[in-house]
Image 1 (tube, rainbow, N blue to C red):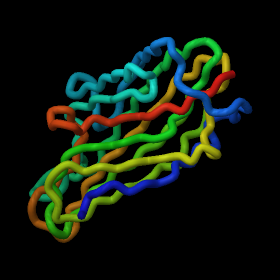
Image 2: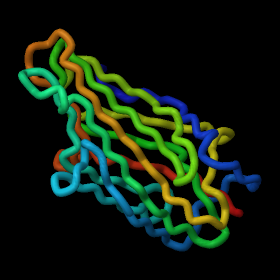
Image 3: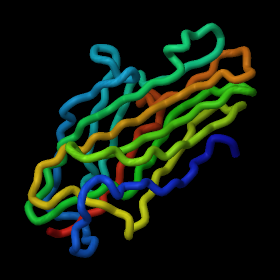
Image 4: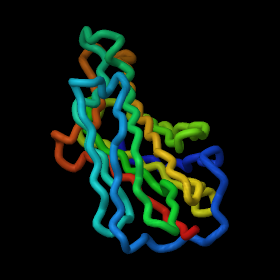
Length: 208
């Protein structure tokens, strides 16, 4: 079926030096996180918001976007075709633990005309390190409904935040719409107004 998820390996080797200890279960102490900054053409100040919630078992956190939409065709301005939203998050990690992002599940809503296409891609990095390569997920038209995309990392390739250091996690997500040969309007969005379209980031934990 068109628009279903594509699993891609995230290249995380540039984030930070790996930790030698084995992957562990999540810490018992409830973690918290703070969104420090939100910016980008897809979430400009005053017109869009994002928030985050941590799972009760510390295995993941969920980001809720609003008004994060790329549009093309039907007379829409070319400026609307490419949107990005970068979120800077501080994860408060219990002493003796560190984390990596093992998997990200992106979900949204799209209407893509025949002859048009849309794209979602994202990368991740800890403050002070180089961004990861982006994993691209392309959705051809015709399509109407909820789209899904998954970025996953093999255990051997996980790279963790440095132990004992406070490093903010940056998540840069991008949406694009391309009218192609279509005449009507198309769009792709990550907007929590639609049911079950929140984005979920899964932790991998290690002891330091």
